[in-house]
Length: 574
Image (cartoon, rainbow, N blue to C red; front, side, top):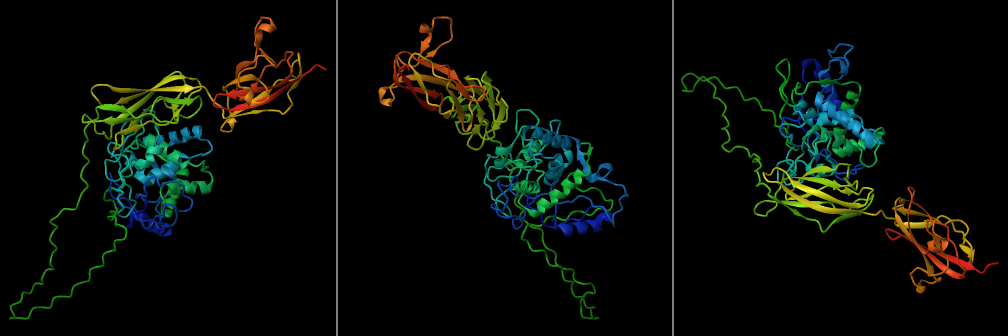
């Protein structure tokens, strides 16, 4: 969120001098003024969308953020000489549930993306400047804020202009987007990066566990290693394109790394709220970027004493007062509650299908409709996978819940086919209805495929009639450059060296022997089916010859269309 304008004095008279020095050194600007919603941002402070080092759109839409800095130690402070963040500093306290969410996100990402090495202290630093740790830990038992934490309307007035992308499902605004939740995600970014951090089957930006895991996943994008300074800075700037934001987050990150302690949820004042009258100074209201500061009022001229007998009063004339405005300032109307959804419509083009181990090309999608058959926004649709194929949604879940957008469409995450071919069903259930509304979408996992097949050596395949070819033919199947295990392949001996001779199996010439106890004459075959091993290798059985001489072809084709044609020569006996 772009930094706020209007400077804010540090709380406590004892730290005034140090805070002023810190503010000057970092050029930090004001702080958010509202508990539930963040104030307007500075457009002038943000670099353009194509700023150097930025790969992604800003998570927050460059909305405003809290610019309070950690307490400093040194001359002018009344701190005890041995005070550290871990032993009593109020600023180092993090609400228990919020701290638990940061640490669980770190552990989850350490398992799923060990290269990134995202520290929970970095998530805490971002959570501090974005929402003051979810308004000081004001959360329910599931880690969700009782009311949404909303940034300003992103309508281009002083900050980004982002038209509505979620039908108001996350931010309650059907005209423009707003940053939402403890980690302040704009809806379009949450749609891509939202995660289920508490395992309840939902991705809720207002839940600190979901939001913390999503923030960590976003920081780890582009294969970053956050122990590398350049990657760390790029990750933070991807959250908000502001050098002041970067410096503020890095100060809190360094502060929490030196020590932090757990405090009860809700025990800290919400950001921007008064903390009592013990020497504190209220924060001034933020000034909209670009608004000139009011000029100081010039002192009026002293009233001359009245002359005796001139009829004038000895009292000075009071200054004119400004009448109160008759028109109240415009306010954003509360969002209206749309009519509920009553049915689901399948938007798929047919049965979902993908080879084993691959991503489905099509995502399961349905449209929620109201009784008048118009699209229903903000409806909750739960997608559940059934079947024995091992297929999951991207991320490993088998159940996900999606909120429809303005067009009523709910798309499940991408499907990843399991390793076992077979049928599956994606069950879409409309939640919040008195009567069950369910739609079954059929799918299938087909046999794994290969897109390339090569022989592992180039030895000429020549044999005398009535003998056995030396060595066994070995091939390797790959898919997208990687080994393709479990791929079915058909090997066929064809007559003649020219494709014009036909693609049917030859009735004489080289042959394979199938396993069994029958006589060899009864086990001859010139067509057989094999499967690649765990490394994608294919080793054909021994190839024998009858008394027929000449040139033949051995055609090997895999599922997926990878083909190799080898020339076989059978010569007269020596």
